[in-house]
Image 1 (cartoon, helix red, strand yellow):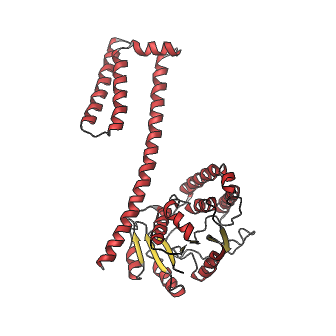
Image 2: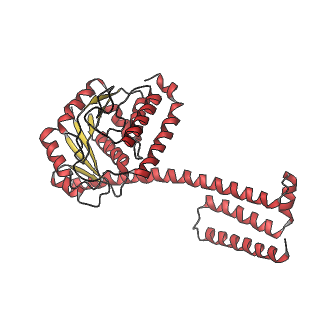
Image 3: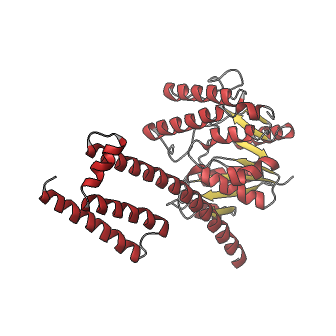
Length: 239
Length: 115
C-alpha cells in the first residue's frame, strides 16, 4: 500500500534535518512530502538536500493551509494512506506503525498523548491553563460528536483514501484545524479512532502561537463547535 | 438650519458626489459598488439641496428628532456595508488560498520537468 507522510514546516530548518533522517531510517518506503509554509529560513533547502519532495507555498498559509495542500497533493498522486508528522521533532517515528495499524479498521487514526479514559496521565504534561482549555475542547467535541476523544488537538494522525479526498478540498485552514478536522471527519460518517502514542518535547523552533491569539482561536473553535451542535442529530444517523 | 450651515452641507454633498463620479469614471470602483455609492451621493445631494425633505420623511415615519433618523439610516447603511465587505473578504481569502495551492503545485510540476 502506497503511504506518504505530510510534514508542514514553517521556519523549521533547525529541526527538520533530524526529523527527515529519522524518518528515512524508520520508514524508508514511505514518500515524504514537506510543505514549506512560506518559511524565511532554509527549510526548503534542507528538505531538498534530504532528497524529499518539497512543496513551497508563496506565503504563509498557516498549518491548516499547509496540510490541505499536502492532502491535495498526496490525493492527486494516488496515495492510499497518508499521515501527518511534525517538523519540530515532537513526534516519534517509532510510533508510526502503531498509528498506521489503527487504519486497519478505521478511516482516520489520531495518536493521543493521553491514555484513553485517563487524560493527563500519558507521560505528557501540560500546564494548568492549557490543561483546562484542552478539557473544555474535549467536552465540547464530545457534545458535538457524541464520542470521546482524549487528545483533540493532536497533530499525529493518519488517514486513508476516502478521508484523504475529503481533506484535500475541505480541510479547515484556520489555526486549531485539528479540532475542526476531527469534527469534519466524524460528521461525514467516517470511523475515527484514537490510539495511545508516545510523544517527545519539541526539539527546535518555537510554539507558533501563544496567549491572546490562542485565546482568540479557542473562542473561534468554540463557536464552530457550538454551531455544530445543531447538526448533531442529522449526522448522528451516520455516526 | 441656518443658511450658512445649509450652504456648507450642500457644498460637502456636491464634493462627495463629484468624488464618487470621478472614481466611477476612472473605473477605480467596480460597477456593483459604483451603483451603491452613486445612490448615496444622490441621496446626500438631495437632502442637502432640499432641507425640508428629511424633516418631511421624519414626520411621515413618526421620528420626532430629524437628525436621529439621518444617523439611524447612516448607521444601518454602514453596518450592512461592513457585513458585505466581510463576506467579500471571506470569499477572496478562499480564492487566494486556492490560488496559492495551485501555484505551488504548478511550480513543483515545473521543477520536476526541468530536472
